[in-house]
Length: 484
Image (tube, rainbow, N blue to C red):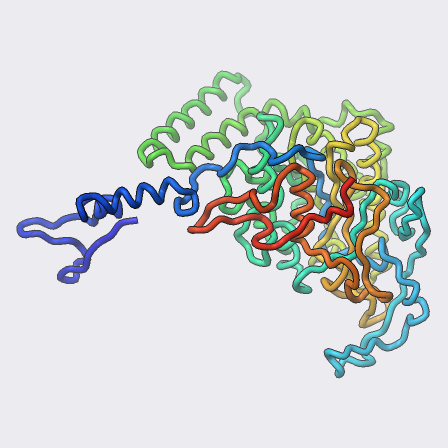
């Protein structure tokens, strides 16, 4: 930042016979009051509370012993209906078809009606957890799940809901959960990124900012792997001779280092250099990590990769890739759903039965297969699996086969390292309209995820724009009741 004093409308400091250039803040303080101002500024800059942090504020290590070290986040965009999946409401059976009387909007009376679930619920596992027939494969993992029935979001809008789930904010520009985890812990494999998103070439309603590092260092940025075709463009080196490829990277590094030196070791340029190096190393490792030829046919069948349904096969492939990535040291992997409704795969305002059954068919087996495969390989206790969307769906309908957005009460679940399986936490009322026990927000969910990874959500901060930011802002409490 430079200061310039107004003088004869030229906005420059003038002296007889010459025109002086604007002076910097440090130069001004150095020449004022015998330099005492500079001493004060130096003291302030030594304190992170006043200085702009150009490097990560903490070493990539946990604050306390972690319960898990990796995360696989199964994101179900659009909003899965809680009353049709993990939160049964028998009361809806007796009210089915009767008018929904909205006290907040009396003019809507009679235009909407209560809608019972098209699917039956049964109790599963030793815990007796009730799960809808919509998810027969996940039901076999009932004793591994910690189900939170008392989630509450802020707005019934996809864009803000997706951003809030991913970044802790309704507004774009904040770092993603995966970026915060990578910033706090780094990657276990220096040849692979710390944060990977397994995508279907679909931009979520919250935009690509949902996966962004925001103002965090660029090394915490996500890397997107596509489901079809080549997972990452240009991952195969263009030069057959690795020495030529190495020489190109070295030239780029030398140019960037010279540029960074002229800027005073700019953190952004340093991050770019590290990302070039990462891309170079990934060219030799990623194809091998994503090569499923080494997996047995039984393992592929476990994930549903042998299915004749294209998207079930692709989603199973992405879930198996997620296991291989965390097995190889990637810290945070997000798995997105196959494409469906335009505002999110699970956004069934109409055709609820058809849409939810299609989506469940394509994802249910792979998610259950992931849990079982992690167990077989001894990775379950060190991997946290998250199943969540941006909100739930209304227990009532404007027709007879659809539900609308419902942030007032819905369900997510966690499984794996640090989680007490076979647990149900919180509750909605008898109709699934409102949370009546243990209200849980995305800030609480984020605080709990970080805690399981050994990170204190109040201490994981980054200095930007004159203040310390954190994923949970000034909110959030760890949901200790679901911890093992």
